Length: 495
Ligand SMILES: Cc1cc2nc3c(=O)[nH]c(=O)nc-3n(C[C@H](O)[C@H](O)[C@H](O)COP(=O)(O)OP(=O)(O)OC[C@H]3O[C@@H](n4cnc5c(N)ncnc54)[C@H](O)[C@@H]3O)c2cc1C
Image (cartoon, rainbow, N blue to C red; front, top):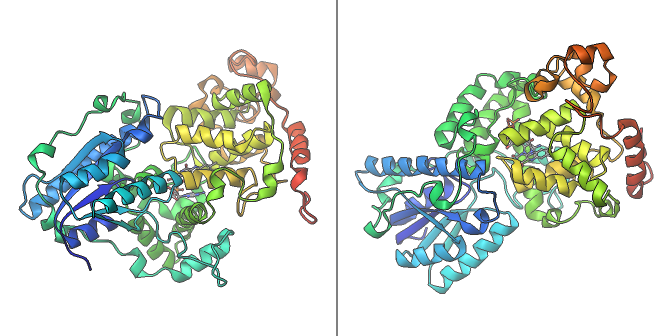
C-alpha cells in the first residue's frame, strides 16, 4: 500500500462519507487528507437555472460537509470539512491539488464517457505535476469487466448475467468500507480555503419545488427512505407495478448521487433473498439490472450514440414539423391517453416517474407516435432527478427494442390496457390529471369512449378540457410493425 503525507479526496457521484470506497482508501493511505467537491461549470452551464438535481446535490453537499466535520471531531480534529468550489473541474482540481501540495488524489470511478474524458485530462495534469490519481470502484457491486461469460466476453443478455452475478457475489463485495476508524487523517482546512459553502444563488441557480416533494436529500434522506422501504420490501413484488401505490423504494436519486451505498442496499436485499423473501429477491434483481446497464455502457459505449443492435439504426422514424408537434404533445402530457399524460405530468412536476410508467410512456413515444427513441431519452435526461446515462439509455433502448435483451420489436404496449391493468381505479390518473378526476373508473382510461352524459357529468369537454387522442393506437400499431419490418429476421415475426 502506498503511503502519502498529504492527499485529496475528490467527491463526485458519491456524496456520502460513510462506506465510501475512495474515502476509505484515502484516509488509510494519507497522513493528512483534505476533501473537495466541485460544482463543475462544464456540467452546470448546460442546465436550466432551476434544476432539481442541482438543488439535491447542493443540499447533499451541505450534509456531507457536516458529516466530515463530525468525523474530524471524533478524531479530535477541529476545522475539518469539505472544500466546495464552483469552477471547471478539469482545470480546478489539478490546480487545487498543487496548491495543497498533495501527492495523491482519490476518487471513485465514473464510467460515463464525459466523466472518462474529464478524468483522463485531470490524470494527465496531475501526472505532469507528479501527483498520483487513484480511482476506486464504489458505485456498483460489479463494474466494467468483472462479470464475464465463460468465453471471457461481457454479457449482453440479463438473465445469464444475473445468474453469473449471483454466483460471484459474496461478503467481500458487499461489505462496507469503514471510515470512522481512520478519521484521524482528516486535516483541518487551510485558512485560505475555509470558505462557507456557496449558496444556490452563488452558483447561479434558483430553488425548485424540491422541498415540497417527498424526496429527502443527503445521506440522512436516503436512510429515511430505506428504513421506510425495508418495512414493506416483502410487498415489493406485488406492488411495484402500480403507480398509485407506494411500492418501490424511491431510492434511485440517492443511488445516482451516491448518498446511499449500493453495498448497503445490496447486502440487505441479498440477506433477505437468501432467506427466501420474494420481494427482496425481485428488488435485488432490479439492483442487478443497474449493474447490468452500467457494464453495457462501459463495454459497449456505442450505445450512447447508436442502437445496441446495429440493424435498428435503419428504422425510419417520423421527422419534420408533424413529428415535432407530436413530440411536444408527448412532453407536455397532451396525447389524449390519460396514463401517458399522467406519467408526463409526474415527470414534469416532480422529476420522478414510476418504472411502469417509464416503460409505457417510452413505448408510446416510439411505437405509437413513431418518434426516435433518442428524442425521448434526451427529454428524460433533462427532467429526471435520478437521470443516469446507463439506466436511461438502457430503458429507452429496451422500450424501442433496439437494446440488449430488449422488448421484442413486435410487442407494443397498449396504453389503454396498461392503464386498466396497472391503475384500475384511475387513482394515479386522477392525482395528476384533476380535469378527469370525476370520470367513472370505466371511462377514465379512454375518455373518448365515454358516453356524452358521463363526460358532461364529469365536466370533461374533449378537445377543450382534455385532448382527443392524437393517434389511433390500432393504426399506430400497424404503422410500427411496418416501420420495424427492416429488422425482421426469420423466426422473429409477431405471435
Ligand atoms: C425509459 C426508461 C428510462 C429510465 N431511466 C432511468 C434513469 O435515468 N435512472 C435510473 O436510475 N433508472 C432509470 N430507469 C429504471 C427505473 O425506472 C428506475 O430506476 C426506477 O423507476 C427508480 O425508482 P425506484 O428507486 O423507486 O426503484 P426501485 O423499484 O425501488 O428499484 C431499486 C433500484 O434499482 C435500480 N433499477 C430499478 N429498475 C431498473 C432498471 N430497469 N434499470 C436499471 N436500474 C434499475 C434503480 O437504481 C432503483 O433505484 C429507466 C427505465 C426506463 C424504462
